Figure: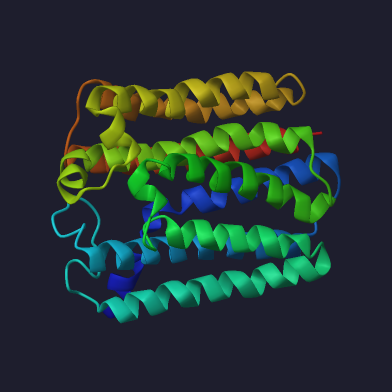
Length: 289
């Protein structure tokens, strides 16, 4: 029971946001150079550990503020009283520490500049809801997700193999980041009423229900589709990813038709599945030389 609670608190449904950029970045390296497999493994450890650490940190910070006391969605360890704030904070720090160990190994092998990138990722994860002025409460969460789980994670995953930043790596990071941001958008769409009551000015709260739904559809369908067509100019097999993107029609339709509350939990699950399927197909298509 204890382990199950910690797994649920880590929010495994969000983990495609960590796995996909590593897979796509590694595929770029395979198409433009040579893959060093232990580096790919270390990059995956960093990405997943940072994601889990961020989820625990979010649970801890929201829990001690009381902003998760009334919430629809996955279990919150602190707000529900299932685990103490100190225990959840410790879990977050241990996850960050695991990411740091793997990151330092990559830095030693590739470039010590990666230490600064890692520090920025840790800060972004902690201060999303932590600190005196959390940026997630100011509507900047989706921007940070696009940057760190799109651009940084994808380009970084290619860089650890190639030792350079390429235009292809930047290009494929756009749909990856858009789908990661879509996960947060639908999560915040579900919580507009409770976040408003708690004083959280998320992007969804600022935009309102109708515009947030439009933003979700742009991120989960329009942006990845357009980006895939552009990528296919230099990597034609990338068009395979459009097959995976077709799976987004279902959740996008549910959002367009006004799904609310618990109905959006299913949309969140499907969005993660779309991201994983699209990302793996994109990685396979990009890897073809």
